[in-house]
Amino acid sequence: MVNTDWTSGIDPSQASVARVYDYLLGGAHNFSADRDVARTVEAIEPQARVLAAANRAFLARATRYLAAEAGVRQFLDIGSGIPTQGNVHEIVQGVDPRARVVYVDHDPVAVAHSGAILAGNANAGVVQADLTDPAAILDHPVTREMIDFKEPVGLLLVAVLHFVPDTLDPGAILAALTERLRPGSHLVISHGTHRTQTAEAVAKVYHRAVSQGAQATLRGEEEIMRFFTGFEVVEPGLVRGPLWRPDSPDDVPEDPSRFWFLAGVGRKP
Ligand SMILES: C[S@@+](CC[C@H](N)C(=O)[O-])C[C@H]1O[C@@H](n2cnc3c(N)ncnc32)[C@H](O)[C@@H]1O
Image 1 (cartoon, helix red, strand yellow):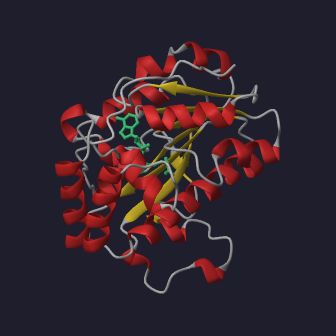
Image 2: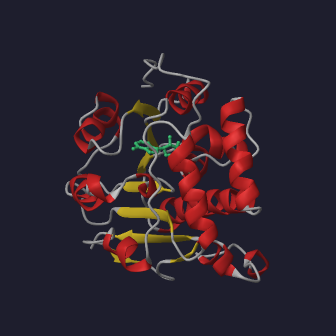
């Protein structure tokens, strides 16, 4: 079942994380306020589009790994964003058409477009909810209908945890989200890391210009690793995004450290 109850709440004069990212990925679901923020970001980080594409490519590789190699058949994708190419349901239902996906985002535009492309897909749904309210996600009727917590789940938190500041206790949010996952479940994370002044400057742009209290919080390797508490991180560990199981050696950039996000996948033993 697809939740068709998305409406309201769109203020085109206020940039949103989902629409800025959509613009950087070459999408068309953005307004001029979003493009202004994206251009400011690009002025600071000329590689912004490359980084966005590399993050999206990590999401695709990790999701394919979960479906094709780890046998996961149900996915909860939180902070799923505006659908673009290589969406999670396309990847996992390409492996098994019965694979189920619930997309979750707090952005009404992301939710509306997800709903539109999922119409007619009985094995995918969308929920408008905030990551900081795990119960609203886990107990939502769409989640309850689609996800069987007695079976392994792929929990995807890709390029979203850095929008949860420490004051909102992301560790506790992770604990609440992963508590009811059974062994064999997987956790996929990518997260901005603070190794460069550029990264810090981009985080400040988001903080100033983007709605929904987007306080981008870049974190170090140890802090991001803590999000995998209760999970065994699979090879190659928590690494710069393009280094996570690249499809081909040609995909490995000359200087991976320029990709200032870390990516990893954990398995619940
Ligand atoms: C950079 S995009 C990443 C999209 C997708 N996960 C990917 O990696 O391609 C971040 C997404 O997280 C969403 N987001 C940010 N904070 C959120 C929150 N507190 N709750 C739910 N979604 C959130 C934004 O609306 C946006 O769609």
